[in-house]
Length: 389
Image (cartoon, rainbow, N blue to C red):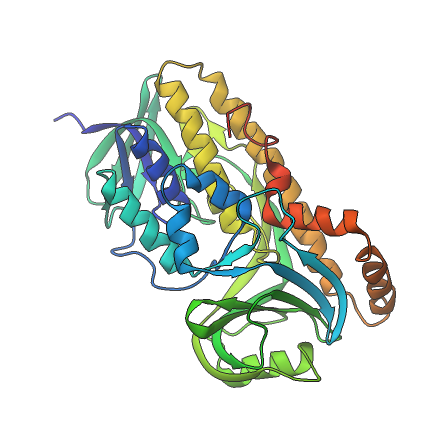
């Protein structure tokens, strides 16, 4: 019996894979999206959606829903404990979205699934891919339960341990940062509710950012992060790294996890009729909240490129866009790695770092450039291989 066929098979139904599915479904393409998990995540994990991501998702009916459910934070501040080093306001961004949007990954996924269903799509679960058999006309994917799906193209959006990347034989070059990261969503007293704060200290960095429902996201680089940080652990992080004049008080830890900071970029994002996007293609530390946003950019731009190719356009466009996306990923991984290293300078280098940052923070150009980089707006037109938007 012949395998059922589709234009594009998307493997992985996190925010990145779902974004690609929405793009293709809205264009009326035959699209199949599968995931190995029996249900979507109910964890927070990625919690930042930047302005460029909202711009890209706007035409697919997603951004307005995200904004309605998230917390708008118009300011990013770098501090050494109570001392303000740099203030990065987003209210001057050349965008409708002059803020960072804080919203849990679970909520983002739910909104994307809702939009996909409106467009007639649905996620097939559970479905674990075990083989990819390419030929000149497409790829046949085989799954653990024996079923097969024939596709003109396959997108791997299945995370840092990507099976699609491995089956396609794409190397994943890079290393692992010596630090691990604690992520926790907590109820706090005496914490800022209208800005994201990156605190430097002798003990290391900690990020405090507001979330919907009166929660705050805590991110901290530590030598050995616990799998499930408790209130005592998070309180110690805030006491030794956060504000001192009016320290935040932890009331409850609602969600917690750890993140091992790999910094890797795949050698190519496009191999024959296989594409990889998101964490399958690039990973880095959570500093700056760039990971999911970079992946959604991949999904939208490569999804649009696939639509053009499937509509009769030159297949060279895929390689052009994939190469542009890889160049962007390399720059972002480098920038995030440097930020993590600077944030964790030892005591001897801390005074000079603070002096340089405080002086640089007085410059409008520096503040504007930081806002453009963090928001992703600096990547407009530089990573789309000539695609509109």
